[in-house]
Each structure stands twice: as structure tokens, then as C-alpha cells.
Length: 581
Ligand code: SF4
Image 1 (cartoon, rainbow, N blue to C red):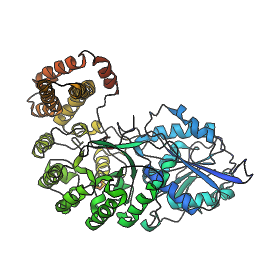
Image 2: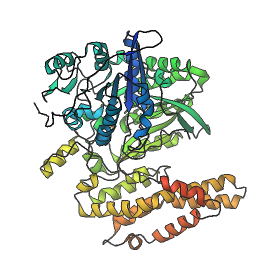
Image 3: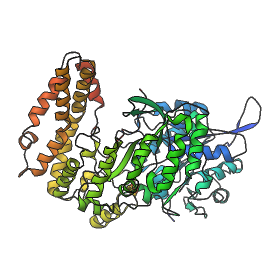
């Protein structure tokens, strides 16, 4: 058992119940909180919190009010936004913790505790499943309980036992009380780390509740989906219908956090469609984001879902989800039917175009499989979300070149998002790639923040290519490049001149190839030199970008966009979900 070093800090005295002034009866207020995610420009929906909230509402009879507070799209410095949570004065506050934002989570948790000293703050989420003890020690004494594994059942037991919560100062009473709550870890007043005994970390899929009924919760982000096929913007909702993944990619945090029970489990297709039908009775939406790690695992389930969904709302609903290559190829002949029934986009876990890199990642597919899967989607005019890791710490230069050749072979050099050029493999706790790295460097990496992957790039050439690509191209120019393309699109959409339209369209194709050309030249350089020397076209590109950004009437808008510019480094594409502006 680990001991906590600083036990002289004040512990809160809890006052479990607040009074409902209308009826005089006690009402328990429960807040579930998603914090700034801190990993690149992405929107992360609090899908796990939606699941927990739905389960609690359905399964707890006592008087309670439960709300989701989603701050995930904010900067970690925006703690003033907590005002709505603080003024609500919850009795219990559950915070979801990711490995990418440990420091921010501790800071936000501390801020909440300072403002609400009577509230009981607990935590869960992927990082807690991997590193609960480390997190509790770092954050002590803010978080009173950490829930490992799936949160529904332990949160329910916590709420049901909350009215018997003893003082934290009495370690025996508190230990006895906390031991009733399954899958939990805590630090008692003697500084000892304790665990409850029950270790059933997964809730059977038959007990999951409809998470779509949580769209009335406060602070959930509004979603939309841009449907290119039907040329319309659709209001959207998001949910998960399965958990885990049957595969075991060597870098995957989902698999690492999901150790017990079946690796992949899902609600039946009929249940999923019934959830959507129930939600349609409450509010309006036209698109469903199914945010599963791997939705296409069971072909018959996908076909049954698609068929049944098409019968709702006169077949006007559309949907999108994610797949790995093997499962997508198994369903490729049914793709035309799925499109007719509403499939619009598949987020593909391609990850690499180099066979040795795919093998390193334990992807269990060939480069040709990857090409075939993308071609199958293209043939059916299904939009593609490209999950792709261009760089990793054990990489050889040839693998970068192979990745680029793959992008050409698969016909995705003009893919709308640029993120796939800049992603580097993250080193999540509990993953084989991180274990191997720790073994090779002979030390454990800190759990306080995700390691800066570029610091561990082993090969000198790869390190040089990566740092030049990111520091000399992406950071100063990527935002401007995106702004120049947007500026052209704006002029294009307003112009009546066919020749101007043709000229700007061609120019955008030229601009879209800039990341490819820069990385290709860097990967073929014989010696290291400034980027303008290695990439002969670099100055042409930058002059063109500057001239477009200073075009009359465009400068103001363009500058504004440049300020928001992103390098996309370290995270996956955020293109699937955006906040309605
Ligand atoms: S396919 Fe995706 S979710 Fe499954 S193990 Fe690989 S990276 Fe993780």
C-alpha cells in the first residue's frame, strides 16, 4: 500500500443533503463534469457521462437531480466558466479524467472544492482505470473516491449510500462506508490507499440505458453534420452503442483501460434504433453520430440497424460511425444499400501506409487492405474520416515515405483535413508501446502528463524531419494555408466568372498538396538544411499564401482564422464534431 506524504492538509466536512425549498424534502443534486480535454483541436463529447446520467435517472428511485456540465471545449485557464456549476451547489460532483489533462483536472477539481467545500468530489474515466492511485496521490485531498472501469453501477451505489456518508476524518468508518461501493480506490485519513473488493468492471450491455435522453442536460454542445451528398447541414446527436474493441493496437488507450470481460460488447440493433426513436419523440435531429471505437464489428448488427433506422422518420435520418479496415471490407458489398439507408461517413482506423509501421502497431492488416477499404468508401461516395499516425518514436525514414506513397495510392492527397500529416503516436499509460519505451530507456514515464512523443524519437533523420516539418512549416504556416484555402472558397462561392472559379479551384488543389510536398522533400533530403533550401517550392507557396491573405476584403477575415490556426499535432482529427457557430 502506498502512503500519502502530506496528511496535514484540511479535510472537508461533508453535508450530504441539500433541502428542496419547494417541498421541504431533501433532494440530492449530482453534477457530472467533463473538463477541457487538452489534446489538440478536437471536440470530445461527454458520452460516458451521458451513459452514467441515463443509468442513474432510470435506476435510482430517491429524489435527485442530475446534470451534465460539459467544459471540454474550453481552455484549461477558463475556470471562471464554472460559475453555473458552482451556483447550482451540487452535493456530489463526478469528474471524468483523461491522461491528457491530469494537471488541468487537478486544478479544476481544486477550484471546485474551494468554492464548494461541502460537495463530495469523486472521479472516474479512462485515466482512473489505468492510474487511480497515482491520480489520487497527486490530487489529494480534492477527490474523495476514484471509480475504476465503467461508471454506471458504482456511481449508483455511491448515490444510494450517500446519506450514510461518515466523516472522512474517521478512517475506519470511511473505509467501511467506501468498501460498499464497487471498483473504487480512496485515500483514508491515515494516508493509506484503499480499494473496495468487488472488481466487476463492466456493466452488461443489456443494462445500459438510453444516453440520448440526456440531450436536455445543461451545457451539452450543439452538434451538426455537414452532409455533402444531400448538400445540407443536419442537426445531430451523438452516442455510443458499443464499448471496447476486439483488436489490440499497441498504442491504444481504449484497450489498455478496458482490461476485464469481453473486449467488445454492444447493445442489439433493435435497442439502438429504439433509443433513437425514443429521442425523436423528445427533440429534433437529422443525423446520428455513432461514436463507437469500432461500430462495424458485427456485420448482421450493422445491416439490421441500418434497415430499421431507415424506417424511422420516412427514411430521412442519416448516420456516421467508425470502422477498422477488416470489418469494413467484410461489408463492402452492402455499402450501396447502407448509403441509400443513410450512411454518410465512416471514420477509418487506417493509422499507417507502411507495412512495417502497421505491424509495429499490431494493426493486423496489409497496406493493400487499407487501400481497398478507402477505395470501397470512395466508390460509394461515403465521406472518410482518416485516422492516421504519420510519425512515431521508433520510426525509420522509409516508413514516412511509405506513408506518403500510400496517401497517393489511396487517392487521399486532397483529403479535406490535414491532421493526418501531423499526427504523432501518443504514449498512453498502460499501452504496449509505452511499456516497451520505458523498458528501453530504463525508467517509468510520469503519469502527470502525457509524454512529449517527439522527445523519444530515436532515429536522427526522423527527428530532424519531424521537427522541421512541425516547427518550420506547421506552426508558422499551416493556419495561414488553411485560411488561404478558405479565402479562395469564399471568393469562389461568390464569383460568377467561370474562369476565376476554375483558376481558384486549381489553386486550392495546388495549396492542398503543400503538406505532402514539404514532407516528401524533407524525407528525401540528402543533408539537413533550412526548409527553403530543402523544399524548392516552399517560397512559391508562402508568397502565394501571403498574397491571398492580403487580398482586398479578405485580410480581416483571414487574419482572424489564422489566429485560430492549428497544427493538429498530437491529436486526431476534430472534423467529425463541431460546435454550431
Ligand atoms: S482498432 Fe482502434 S479502438 Fe481498436 S484497438 Fe485499434 S486503435 Fe484501439
